[in-house]
Length: 152
Image 1 (spheres, rainbow, N blue to C red):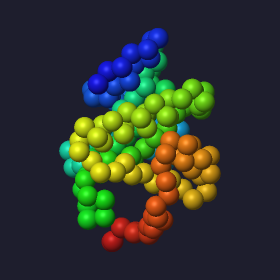
Image 2 (spheres, rainbow, N blue to C red):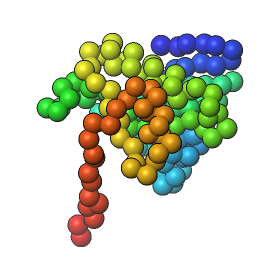
Image 3 (cartoon, helix red, strand yellow):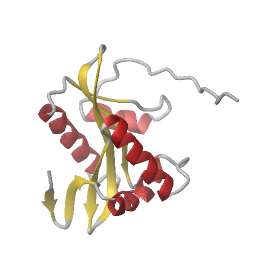
């Protein structure tokens, strides 16, 4: 999948160089990522373990929006597409790239025979929640978590 529109291309980041180019955009969403090298290592590990993919909106060969996702299966949802990461650079917000990524993820889910598209967002992230509602995503539950400290 490679869609082009006025110097804008929607395609997956595949190579190390493309993934490194995505770091600054992802860092806006995930500021705890220390650097591009760590990001690259994690993405490769996630690819191998869970089939993680990084779909990007490229403007003049620079990413301006990203969607990290994986196809999975569990007893709650059956086969589903899980969106790990969704970010549009601050300078490109209101450009509809987030909506375009959600649309493409929905098409990907359909091609992958998924029953659902699932994502999580923080309870305090009301702007994202409004955006997700506008995209037809509904809140279906709460996600609970607990920090586990390393033994030793």
